[in-house]
Length: 387
Ligand code: NZQ
Ligand code: ZN
Image (cartoon, rainbow, N blue to C red; front, side):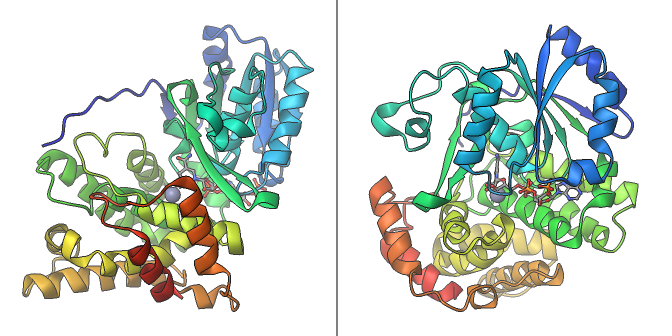
């Protein structure tokens, strides 16, 4: 049994046709001048940006578009400069995990007196001590960034993808409207299901931590994600979209980690595949997770058995159930059209092992996983097996 503390102050406005409530929430926060931040153009194409601007006609706003998937430090610093020169007192993120994460960084960097990269690289314990408040309008269910205080920021020229977060970085509010799912391409729908699935597995597929309620909640998210798979062919199905969006938020709003033993090594290794080969975040997880479960088989076996029985209805010996649970997880990812081997994305993997070794050594990541048993030899095996 694990002690825990839980706190999540983000106000979630969930459901269709709620955008008219945006001015009310902003007025409660006494907002005056808003930076509207978005990505590479989808919010314009789907007509969401113009809807938001109509609703915000009584507010002073400025725009910052062009935040790319895996948001880049250099792009975000341009937004920081714009906001500093424009007296912005609130930021509205309109987008997916990349825009929302980017806004979390921007909100901390605006009032930061030093070099913001120091915070991401954790140089001399640098931290953001203040942040400009922000809210989100979610356009893609996947990361859960709309309901958590974490962010992942990339800096391609340094081959880096770094995390940041803390209590300052919870959105003040998030509008989660499942109708946005209708506009998503299959690739992003599949990515979203897999990211939410692996977020749940990172907090569940560890040891038997005897928090029965939390385990059942994780299983509910996993089973529901399997149920919503039909969204790939019916993105306009509101029932599927509603449940999909709810799952993605629940997977990483902090609830599942309460009283749980968590892993997160799949994410830590996966981020390096994005850095090296620009593979979508969720797809890196589909590549790493099955191989990591195989390498950690003995440590995760009891939980794999519970997962196999409860999610896939498996029977047989414990070893058979645990092995089949890994196989069926991988097959589920593949059934979404997502390849689970690195060679299917990238022919030249010669830099892989040395790159990951260098980065993990620099960061002192010597003992990963729920019990510190993912050390360099295990990481190397996972990487070799994932090719
Ligand atoms: O840039 P635009 O034109 O907006 O297009 C985006 C982007 O190309 C498009 N898109 C978004 N909403 C759309 C849409 N296209 C059509 N209709 C819509 N309604 O989708 C593409 C991907 O968007 P992105 O925001 O990158 O996707 P996702 O939400 O998967 O975010 C991935 C990022 O989040 C980080 C990842 O590392 C990655 O950088 N993560 C953040 C986490 C967190 N903060 O808690 C946890 C995750 O594990 C993850 O690491
Ligand atoms: Zn993720």
